Image (cartoon, rainbow, N blue to C red; front, side):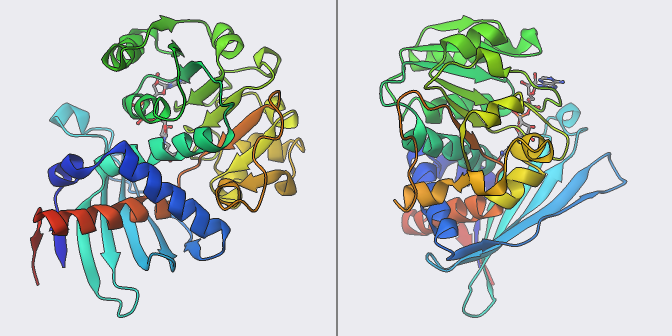
Length: 320
Ligand code: NAD
């Protein structure tokens, strides 16, 4: 059994590593070679926390395991991250545990890698303006991963809590790109690519503001009831998802689907586009939407690569 601590994982992570691992596992899911097992998510009735398991198996990379963790809202006051997660990997041939890894930083990288893969596959090649809705913990990772995929020349941002906007300005500055805080309507009208990464329960971006040719990666909605964009956008977009069942139940598409604006057959798994089995964007003026609900296999895929890298570099430790 190999152990890689949270700090060691953070030191080994990169956006390139996460991008490749997530691309490969999306492809495995679409090819029917990887499955996500049903998610368990429970209110603990203690510390106001939500706790659960996400697990899966990828036969292509022989990855079996689970991510366990959740949300402890009181952690920040103790100097800890509210989201806590740990990854446990198993040998699929024997069922024996093979590795234990800190999963907090991995979650941010694998989530950013998901939207980045959607941008790589679906955004117009000439995309110049990146719009980001949301300025919380995940937003930095989202922007860093996105700018690796297209030659963006400007970032525009909106956040419901305006006092958090300096977070976005700082990321843009670190990346050497100009940043403007704008209204949600301006953001929708000016952006070639929009990433939404909030915990909103109300649409932030309305259908009538979206311009032809825009790619939208909806990354914040991962629970029943959350919503970031107007459900009507799905009615005029080509829709893609990391996993269709999650997309229509806990993802951004849940609202459009329940309102009869989007049928299951109208959603394409992003992995099928990566595999070359289904087309992505067909025309420059298509509006494309990617619903990135977050699947456990993304964590397991990144964890497997990190474990191999750690062992190769002599980072972490083995124990019985
Ligand atoms: P965070 O708590 O650091 O930031 C929350 C963000 O949501 C901030 O921008 C905040 O201003 C905004 N927000 C909060 N309440 C809002 C409201 N009522 N209306 C509009 N905006 C509001 O959270 P984070 O870690 O950055 O995560 C953001 C979202 O992404 C969460 O919903 C989280 O569950 C989700 N998430 C999804 C995945 C995935 O794989 N899809 C992975 C990790 C996190």
